[in-house]
Image (cartoon, rainbow, N blue to C red; front, side, top):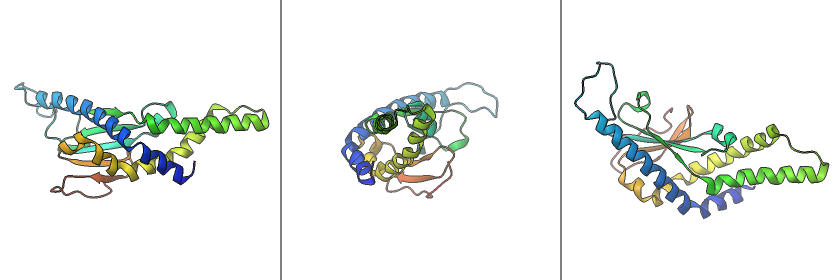
Length: 190
């Protein structure tokens, strides 16, 4: 696929991606609300124990390369309170991006078919996975490029008053969305 093909793929699917983001975010927010209510329960806990969630302060969207290899949802949405990444309670949801991710697997199948046609040698699984890994960089970059447009079309994202970051798990992240009145540092480590 050429760079232009990647851009066309994403531009044609922004509305679909925004809708599926809204669904994943809604699931995560319901879970977050449950954890927040647990925080407000009047129960006695040890001083160092973490009970429930505080006010939502940031959302991280992580691109998971391991999920590309396992054909699972590529993006995970994590919701954090003021404790940030040291929070002991996980609140996340997978974001279904199959409207664009299926093209990666289809492209690898085409390469495998062409190779078999030319050489009569079947592509091994690790060779196909290497194609997935090589192409996944382009998808990662396109998600970063189009994330502000996707978020702009996601109605529920406008109702969430926090910073939005995108990146790879334990890698560098980029602030991709924030309410007008909030400040944040770009390229925080996630």
